[in-house]
Image (cartoon, rainbow, N blue to C red; front, side, top):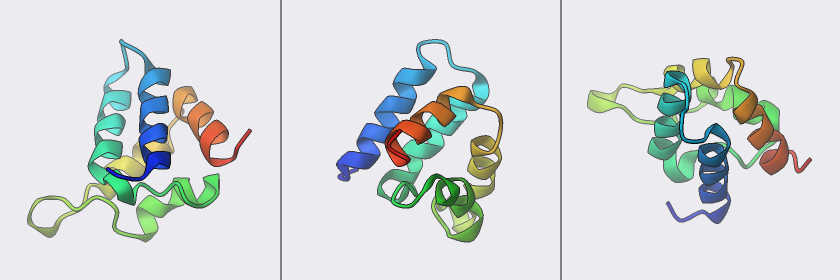
Length: 92
């Protein structure tokens, strides 16, 4: 990863979930890292939550995609993610 905004987003999420994340939070963090510089943080929060269904972000093995896993997780009730999205994408 080279994009400082994406690195900051991933680090902020890792910090927000702390040392004892849920299984879903651990998986989501790994998916964010897999997306790397393609993580969709360059729009508003609406784009962040919907991009996973609209564009290919994480290529999986043999041409598959992990985007639907990420989409389900980013659209679940995760207060840690909501905090990071509001602070780093929306600037609140």
